[in-house]
Image: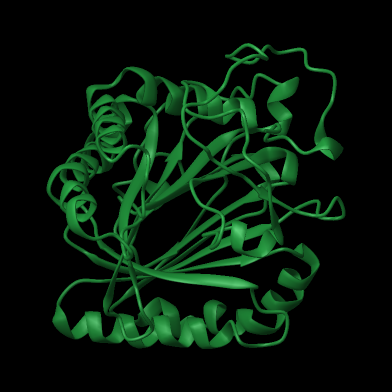
Length: 351
């Protein structure tokens, strides 16, 4: 067993971990690894928003155009496609792309940005958004319960750890973040949920995040499950998970969550896959931790999962993972075109 923090990112710890050095987790988990030369990644969420059947057809075509651009020179090393219906009833389709080289991303963007910047986007009856973050490797962590196929940013990092120690206890995510060895990761402004009901249609809205905005992507893949495990997940676990995700979507402002999307993976034709994930933006890691440790919606999720794995004697075909990023101001970019005012970070941060 080893630490989730790679040797090249270890430093004298001035902030204590939540567990003793002798702690042994109850089941194995792993983190993605990269060569020391990797200093920063880029994660891009490129979305299309529509209301009505005709507009949804246009949004699928627009998503196809976005994904086609990924095949250009310097395109991402990995991408996923996802779909969800938001609280306002709008259909949203998203391409999530990952680059391991920010310079390559900048080159790709320089020759693909014309479509996004075109005035034509302002006059379509569908909306567009892109949320781009570029955390340094000391600012994010990953966790997986299996190692043969890594999701999300793990797909571009090139390696995986042995079993790690820092998991299966409250506060483990913070203990896996290299920067948290010596930094409290507190945000640069008080928690407020401002809203933007006056965001005009036919406009581009750009938002700058504050210091230490926290983003978590947490996923579930039940493709390979069968029998009892499949039934336990779909009939008992997933409904509880969905309830928690809907709480964050509808009432997240009460606990410091700016935005939450519970998404279903889709294929290139828009057909649903047996994979989901939640993506949420938080005022701070502390707010995320407080919800996880004490709120009834997350305690129900965690408790249901533990009952499930114990009943299955910790033998799971269900694949679980997450990635958490703690962002500096210059590592975030949020832009929305023709989107309704409760979309993404427009819900919580002033324009």
